[in-house]
Image (cartoon, rainbow, N blue to C red; front, side, top):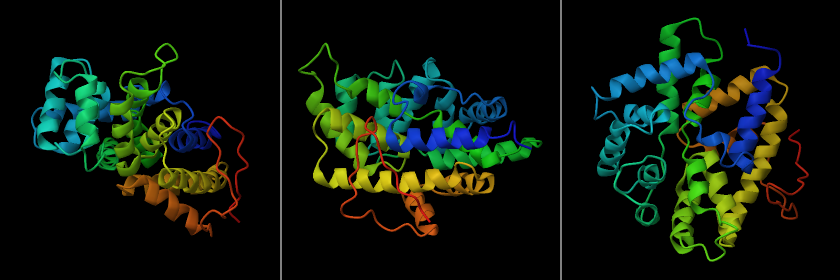
Amino acid sequence: MRHASGVGARRARHALRAACAGIALAAGIAAAASGDTDADAAVARLAARAAQQPDDLALQWIALIGDRDSPSAARTVMRLQRREPRNAAAWALSLAVPGTGTDERTALSHMARGTVYDEHQGTAARAIATELRAAGGVDDVNRRAWLAADSGSLAGHLFSACAPREAEPRHALRAACTAAMHVVFRRSTDLTTIANAQHVLRALHALDGRERERARRLAWWRDGVDRRIAYDDALERAWFDALVASDDAPATLEAFARRFGASDPPADWRWRPPDAPIDPPVIH
């Protein structure tokens, strides 16, 4: 049973639009809890195991969903940075967790040298889903697991660190942010993070032609999938099943769109920024 008629569809629409278009850029995305008590309890149980299993990367990332202020959180971040020195996401954690000994400029510099950007969201979602199933009596497991994992996204912190400030027209971190955001946009496998990196690069007038084309393609597929899942509960469940099973959300989005006959966006279809009116396509 669903919690209420239409709740899942509305949450799915919000999650997809926030992930791909950058709506709710910094505010709700950085929340430490998903608002789902069952999922939050599952995250807490998994996080409790992290201290006993320091070599389990997924558990370490999950531990940081609900706790980013304690000394143990800072130690977890530093451990992840040692384990994954080329993962830009590990260094982005220093933008969210105090006490790691890495300031913004240094964190961004490490991010710019990253070869991947991976918050291990798919792995975390699968672990949360397994925990929810083990607890029993929980419906819509994959949707709830994905939203719980997504509640730990670093996207809002990236936006807060790098979005141009009106009071700082010269933006002291502009060069460092531009270099880091190019890596995030090109290397991330998380739709929410890509959307925020895209928004920051646009604001910094640094989005290049290849990145604009990727943004256009994601917007095209996003709108088609969004329209498909909006009022179809079974399809919404299939969407979240696909997300949880994958470690590459953009590829999952494209595959899901093509499942319903979507092609590449027409050459004359012009993508507009998230705050501009969009004429979305319909997948027939």
